[in-house]
Amino acid sequence: MKVTNILILAISALSIFSCKSVHDRLQTGTIVRDCTGTYVRVAENEDYLVCNADILATKNDGEKVSVVYDYTKECAERDGKIMCMMYHENKGMIRVKSVQ
Image (cartoon, rainbow, N blue to C red; front, side, top):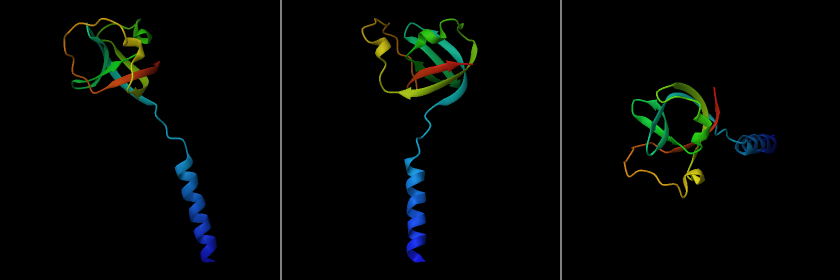
């Protein structure tokens, strides 16, 4: 009986830890643009730099959008591009998957 309980517990724990975690996030925010890039402001002064800013090209600065995104550490789209020397504080970089 004990062995069966331990086996069931082990299988349950294994199945929970083997599930793929969801990385997509849905957030409503405001488009903010300046010479440093395109950002989504999701709260009071919480800006996230959008790596693939071309996905928001049809949206206007100050427009509210709902975006599905994932955090990223690399922004290949910005490599080799000349940006202004202004500092824009942000909470990190995101890659937008879809705009709603």
